[in-house]
Length: 436
Image (cartoon, rainbow, N blue to C red; front, side, top):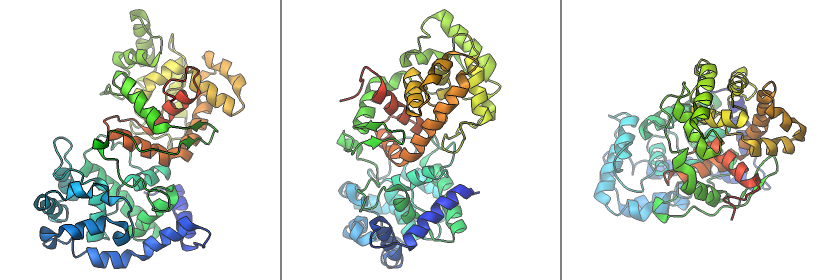
């Protein structure tokens, strides 16, 4: 079910678009995109229909990728030359894409398998789903960086799909898009245009980030920086994250957790690379046994895919889990969250003393820092920090989601809470690591 808060946010965005004034360029631009639907589908729907797509003309395909023709997506053509290098192969791929005798999951998983090469290099999710939308406007929504950021922003991004195949991901997300469009009584084309207005991403008037960067480019796109709701300005987030990952990713984030509902010795051992100071055999055994005995029975009550933006930090589950963790010998909030982040990576960020101090000072509660050293109060103070962190994430999620996708193209898979935590830590710790 589409929850009320998401519908309220989307409805306000729709109202803004419909009431667009000359002073509201973003809303006016979105309204123009919506108005272009019938003409674009009349022009390109037949081209991408079964049978016709078998003989697709190269120039017609490249023309569709240009914004002046599709009137909706501004960066589809960035890999156009590479995609059309082998037209017979492209026609074969697109014939598969629009073949309704197969499930959409099957089609997309053949085009972009979980393992092995893609059927056509450079043919990404933004282009594939835009074609599906034009070919079957009532059945398929669009999945690109902009819509993904919008879904996360309103709390509709499905949980537990991060490791699924592309076909499985899209099938799940498309159901959400269909349900949202039906609840709002709009078509999928209009819903996709609303993500531009809601997030400020992807539309030509905002500077497009509609598709993922070319993995062959070797560099992240330049960005204007990120200013958090709490006041911290990060001047070079993309470069900083890439530098961090190149140095540290393999020693913590790149180590897969295979038992999310149990704390294992490995979960404690890897925190050494995060400066946990659990750095000898006695400490490792003590922390592992202490946290496992207190937390393993609590973890199943929190969904593995729990998202900080939709799972309240004040929830008794979170505070209860943190309180149980810090009761273990040798464990306070920094160690607890460095272990628990592995268990619930999109819910619990690492809250070391640098991050704790920053948010307590930013909220005028610096005096509470001393309480983080007291096991009676540490969890409740951590929840206060989590609330501040959550607000930063809520306001920054479009940019954070874009950063996440850029990093994923280079093999660095980080959740939004981890990205924000890295940026806060590197932006406030005294050693100025990873700051150019």
